[in-house]
Length: 119
Image 1: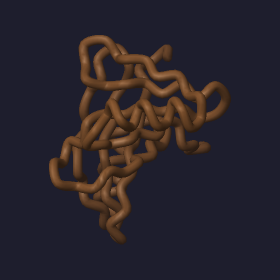
Image 2: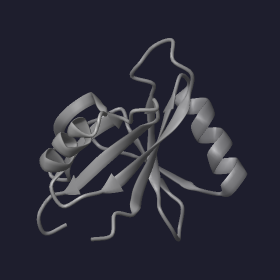
Image 3: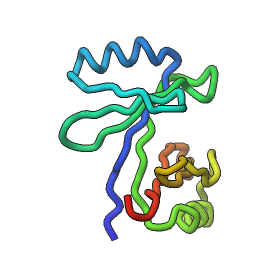
Image 4: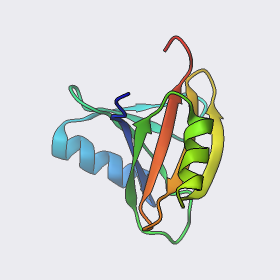
């Protein structure tokens, strides 16, 4: 099974400033996600992403890549068995899918993403 990068998320202390910069820099379209403080980033072709206020106050701004998996719970458990730490347990994004956030044994962060069936 291929496990491509499918979403890249910016955690930023200043979402408005970041939206203005990236929209101006790359001509990306920014769309507010209804019911959440989240902005979807439409890059046109290729892997898009999103941005949100950094959930870890005091952390530096950073990009978090998400990797597609068939079963996010099983993949999260596999990562843990291989020495990873779980920064965010498997969580639901209503009507979209499920995700978790992993810290690999060297300290690098990434997300796992399983879309809702039929998406």
